Amino acid sequence: MTLVSVLIVAAALIGIGLYGALSQQSFVMLMMGLELMLNGAILAIVGFWAFSLGGAPEGQLLAIIVMAVMAVEMAVGFALVVAVYRKRQADMTESLTELRH
Image 1 (cartoon, rainbow, N blue to C red):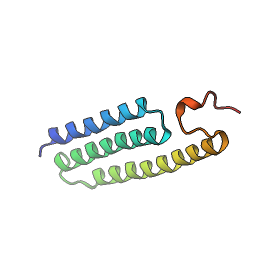
Image 2: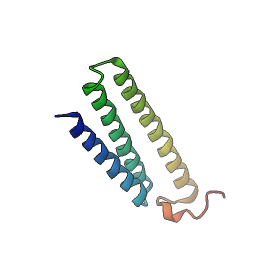
Image 3: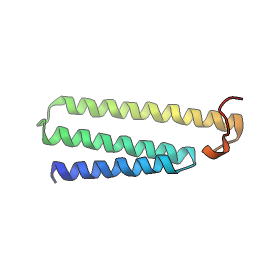
C-alpha cells in the first residue's frame, strides 16, 4: 500500500462524509457524516505520518488530538440533539423553522 492509495481512501471518506452531512435531514445522520469526514482526516494524518515522517511521534500526537476532538464533537452534538428533541419534539432538520423560541 502506498501513500497515494491511503490518501485516495481518505479523500473518499471525506467526500462520502461531506455528501452525508449535506444531504441528510436526520440529526444523527448529519453527525455520522461529520464523523466520516474526521475519520478521513485521521487516515490522511496517519498515512502522512507512516510514509513521510518515518514514525516521528508528532503524527501520532496529531491523530490522538483529532480523536479527542471527535469525541468532544459527538458528545456536544448529541447533547444538542437531545435538547432540541426535548424542547421541540423535532428529530429532523426540516422540522425546525427557527432556532429561537
